[in-house]
Structures are given as structure tokens and as C-alpha cells.
Image (cartoon, rainbow, N blue to C red; front, side):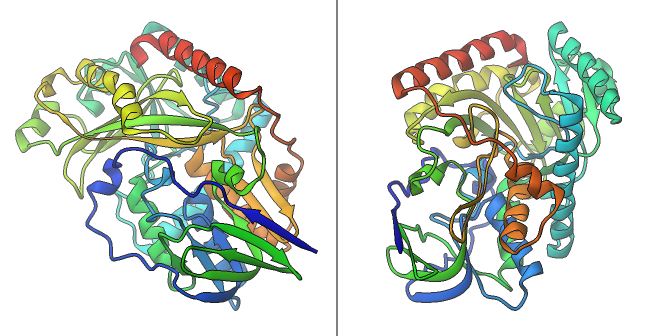
Length: 448
């Protein structure tokens, strides 16, 4: 019996040039697949999930051959476009406070920390500097009384979970960020901040000793015949006994979960490098990261190191069922970034944004992942529901373990999840989703 899958859309669809990627040194030329090869394992997708799956396979199947394919350069896709928080605690962006049921959130925190510990070991082994992998915690920053109240409610939720946190008043927020904009903040100490593109590129370089990585090599067709998967690319092919699909929302490009996945674009802007005088004017600590007390507000990062001192602003949600966004979408979405930046940093009124971009995340209507064996020897680690760094890493680890015959409680939890629910027809889901997102952003007010 033969199964043939024609891949309908191999474009990554993320508009603009990610500042994370642009400020790094030019990478070596890509290794593009030009031959017909055979491997024991094929991982499709080189983001957080795919890289983690490949590394876990190296640990579990050290004598077996592993190939990883990515359709673009590693670090250019969605994994290299986010705001760079590897968050341990509950972070449900569909709520106004991130929190859910206590027992459920305790379990999710435990899973997230399993993923963070895996990433930390890789960071140590691969020699990542602190600017790439920094276990400095995360601050939920409140710019309004309503945001301040969200933080106070979140403290109580964290206490019920048995989690520590530190309250920061306005003076402490200014000491850290240099900005007088924030009324308060809530520091949770076990989040890691990453330089998103440097992390993924460095991770790929680290595992390349044991994994054959091919970039700019999209899979255009998959066929399963006589127990072997045959992945066809524009200039070559890979035959493998087992395949892990770590393509997040592009799972539907492979013909799975049609009308069950939601594709949300978020947008970011990054300043040019600040001068020494501007760094002194801003003050604060050299590097920090704040997430908004309201999930629909602005995430802000101050970075230093390669590329100089810069500030990143991220806000604006946009639903697009086509998985495509354009430069025009970026320009329309980031109009408010400059206002958000100037409200927080009036002392930097002459600092312009150098990079503006969009990145896609994948959600399901009922907030569940797509995980497990979706066809014979074809495994999925997709649909991270808005916490891609931690959950993507976790899904990749667990997919590699499950495909290797490992069983544990985390895998069982994933396998027991419901399937993503079907979405309404396109015109209605597009209109309804964007109306909801726009309303939530309006409600966020000055948190944005």
C-alpha cells in the first residue's frame, strides 16, 4: 500500500527581515541537498521543535543516521522571529491574565522546565554566550492600573501553584529599563531570554556533528511505500524509515489538519544600534526583557552584544488563514510600534527603527497541540499555541522519544489531548478572529 502527499505550499510566508537574523555575521553558504540519499531518520523543519527532535534522536539513536531538512536558512523562519522568551510558567495568550486552572498550569510549568533544562544543556555544550541564552527571568510589566491589577492577581495564582515571584515598584522598573512608563512589574526568575536567530543557528551548528542538515531544501512531496518514506525535494530526495514533521502550521501544507489550525502573525520592530551617548541617556541594565501584563500589550527587549545595544518592540496580532503576509501587512501593523517606543523611551526620540518584520505562530481553537503518529512511521510535533520556544522544544523532544519507543507521562499527556476542533468557514473565521484580536488590543490600551 502506498501513500502519496503532495506539499502545496513550501513558502515560509514570514515578511520582512528579522533584526535577530540581520545583526548576526553572515552565515556560511547553505548546504543544499543535491543527491538522492538514505537515512534512518528524517526530520522536516529546522525550528525549535525540529532541532530539539534531532538532538534527542542523537542521544537515543546514536548509531543511526539522521537528516534534517529546512526550506529556508535556519534562523530565518518563525523560530528566529519571536521576541525570545523561553517561558516556564503558564502563558495562555488567549486569556487576559495568562493563567488557567492551577493543577493544569502546574503540570504545564513542569513540562516547560523539562524543555528548558534540555535547552540549557545544549547551550552549555555548544558554548552559547549569555546574550544568546540568558537565564535572567522575565518581567510582566504594567503600564496601567488595570495591568497592575492583572499582575497582583497573577501573584496569587503563582502562590497557589507554589511558585516564587518578586514585585517591582515603579522605581525598580526604571532602574532596570531606564523608563518611567511602568507602574510596576512582576519578576519570575526561571524564564530564559534568547537571541532567537543566534540560538537556532548555533543549535544547528552544534548538532551538525551528528546530523546531516540541508537548508534551502523544501520537501515538495512525501510518499510511503513498502515501509519506507521517500521525501522529494527540488534537487534530490531522502529515503528514511521514520519521519518527524516539525513544521508547525505548515502541517496543513502536507495535507493534515485542514481547517483546524489558526495562523496568527505577530509583528516586531528593532532599533538601529544605539550610540554610547544614547545608551547613557537610556540608562537601566544592559539587557532585559518585559512581557506585557496584558497579553495583547507590547513585549519589549533591550539587548547588547553582537549588533550593539538595541531595543525591540513587539505587538499587533493578525489572523491570516493563507499563512502568508506581505511587506504591506508589516507596514500597516507596525505603525503603532513607533508610538509605543516613544511613550516608553522619550529620551530616545531621535532613534529610528532599522528592522521591521512579521512572524507566524500556530494555534488551535481548543488550545491543543498536534502530536503523535499521524500516519505509519510519520510523527508530528506541531501547533505550539503561542509559546513556541518552550513548547516547540518540548514537542520535538517528546516526538523523538515517542518515535523511538520511549514512554513517559508527558508523552501520555500529549497523546490524550483532543484533536484540534474544526474552524468556521474562511470568511467567517477571518472576520471573527481579527475582530476579536482588534478588540483585545483596544482593551489593552496603554499596555500596548
